[in-house]
Length: 371
Image (cartoon, rainbow, N blue to C red; front, side, top):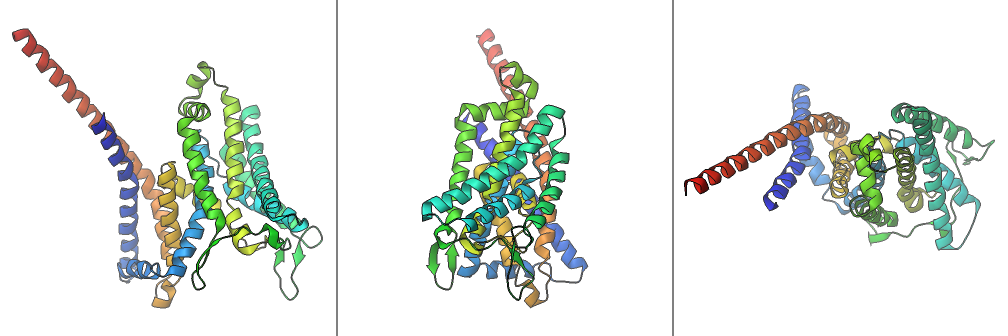
């Protein structure tokens, strides 16, 4: 049993490692084909990441990515593809910022109100897709893509000055107004030069622990994984599959709503037109690379955040910072292929071990008969 667990652990690491190696090789080929040094950009990124302020940026970005990836992973474990995390995240952040700027409560209550609003809005928006799937059989992929577009338009309408938005004097930017200081989530300051690690980044880590515990140590987590593996089999064992689908979408949306909190409560303190977008789609990459495992997702979030933040200075050395974007795209392609290769190898390895065990049992039986 221990040897089997060891093999499974090795195979678990093999998929992401192979995807990363392939992505680096292909990116190097692209650089070489364009007449650039295929290795220097990597050394420049590593050197840039050695600075403390860049490390803080990486950690902060990883916290946001981690929450978005957890939201995607909840759906994946249920065999649902919640591609609408980005819309749920942005709409939740905007509504939470709007409510947070409209009231001024004592610190803990103000923060709690903002977080609860974000989770409820995210869960509501994802719940629409869940209801459509359970009642009308609409694919969650189609419905969440449509809901992303609707969320984008809804946010753009709500933030207009004629509605709830505020236009800063001398600026074309629109915001929801600034959240009072009582609603700012305290962070961890390493040094004045390095900046602060968002306090909500530690909450994100806590969410990862909760995710692992619920999925692996509770009846609900077992039912969720069982329904994702085989809806008909789970239903035959007494699990309400439709209820699990809707519940999973609600939880996924609620976690997606949290993805905007590190930036909102730790940095901007308002929602504006330049609030980060595309976080939900990056979360899909991270969840795939991390194989929906809490630790794997954390490592993947740090990797993608490293590529984002350490590549900002590449243009100063004659390299486009979009090199990191190319690598991220190649990781998405490579991860699908590498996981399939690892799965097939693991299946052959398991069949080989079973054959060896059967052969050993047959030899032992013949020896006993001969004796």
